[in-house]
Image 1: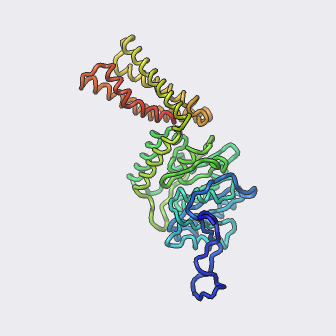
Image 2: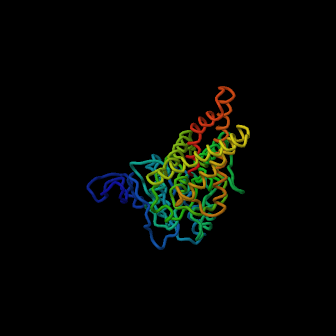
Image 3: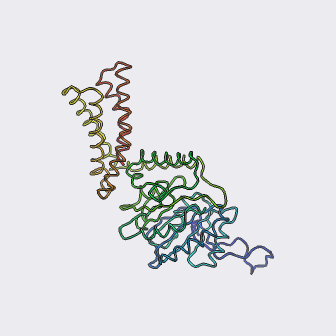
Length: 403
């Protein structure tokens, strides 16, 4: 038997054996799963519509009430559903509390995961064992309001691929966050927009851990998240065409301690960087390099024509040339390099262009600053300064523009 097989979990010997013990009997409500990742695949059944995964670790104080609330909300939607608790072998035996609820309410499954840990990988594990056509995730700490699940289910119409609960749309928000935590959250969003404008720009809350996704969107995707958020992975690697957002207010924990730490933001940055570099493979890499070369050449030609032939000043010439390079880069990547990943719909294209413009505009400003410093402080010639700035900063802008 492989380590990822699902088996009924038995904490103790068979009561029928000659071993005498006063320990608890076998809990048949708990399935034990190994740590090896499984593909999500298209498997499922025609009866289950929604599979909502609840990843947990040391949430014994919260999980019982949460499962009862989620069960009631999903029942009222009229959708055929299953709730899947994926517990990372919690020392407080969260899986036992969840199993007790599962013995009373239908449609609840409890997976006790050994040999692995981490919220995002627990979600993928749950999705791989799910039966539903729509997959989802909600935190197990009670900070995501269960009633919002009904809004997400209703948003998953035939044209919606992902329905995200967002703190940053009208009606959403946070309850009692400190100014520092609010700043970190917004800073993470801005950083994501800088590195992955075409992905992060599609949602207002890229760090949301509360959403539904159509199974066929991620069935064959190579999901490999870093850190504790999986929405970025779904948006970047899944076949996502249309996203819907619904507001929610992030609540404070009723029980237990918050697991948010500085390491989570480091993991988020690592995740952004890996996704940033992921598409540059084989044929796409060749196309990317060709687009970069063409855009650099066009940038230099426009600069020379405006500055040398038209007699415009240095800063204005470099700014116009840089903007021309940005627009050409975005157009060529959308139409050729990553044509299969291009954003669909006019509104999505406008949002992507604005996101790219903000990100690359920042680098363009840096390039202008470098040019002026080299000319005015180090007394280099304008053409030499332009070429040095182009070589130093523009490759980074083209890397960002590929998204």
